[in-house]
Length: 381
Image (cartoon, rainbow, N blue to C red; front, side, top):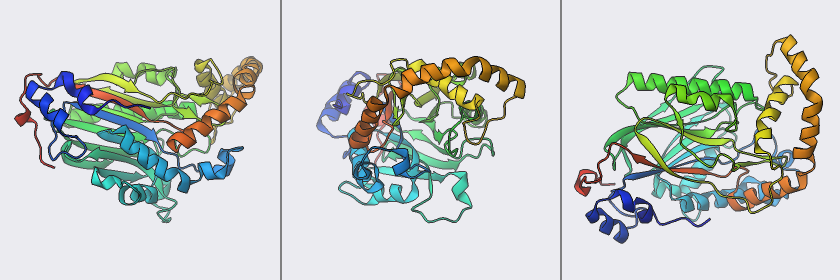
């Protein structure tokens, strides 16, 4: 994927004097930040609970093992050139390795905040096994940073990493959060993921009421497609879906491709653009909307693990009426295109080091006037 230089994306939002400076200075090495745009990426970097051999049958171990994927992911972090990275399924040891080791250690560019999933918090396991969510932010872009581990209860997401700080280019406080909805379940359930998204939305409203911050960005692997009711209902909470291109998949399993990764925003924030890598391989199932009904049927048939509690009469009625049509559609959309789905999964692993690809949104703060001088937003790193 060809990424445009950062100064081209900021040109429309910078004052004339700042435009000249942005051309002469690379924002990745400049001692000062004068950015008026905030580039945020969410990415599930893949640390599966099951063995990777079982998760990727028919794909060589040399492709999906962690040691082969780490340098790919590290290089793609640099290629993304994002100001904020919202990460899910990141093992603590892998995060340290990418920050401190390799050809281009990330700690030279980013500060970080890591939160373990609840199943690891009391397990006393080694760092090699522990995984969680993390937020990385470019040094000099956010100041006065506070880090939080938000616990939404036993029915909430396995962990929620939260960072709050002042975006230098805006001189405004922004809260950033990430989570992997139903990410600790062996087989995620769409009903649990929807309920956890509603919990996150409620928490954002609470944070807004309890602090002076009124700008929020949440991103993560939601295990939900844009057709999920919980996503459509977010607007009632004043939360908008910031990431566009809803029909482009971001998760490429060996069975199917789906759009599970999203970025949401609340407050005086405007999403200017969305970037999602496009798989060059032919699409398996042309009906992207079918993924959500399939998730619902997994809940109905008791195939989600842990099993979802559904009233017996409703489960029986839906199973009797919908199982046969669903099975026919599943054969057409999942079974027959299986070779193509495996090719897509292989492409994602080889190109990005994960079965997910990142979703990147460039934000502009509506409250920053175009005529503000550069001196007002400069910050030494």
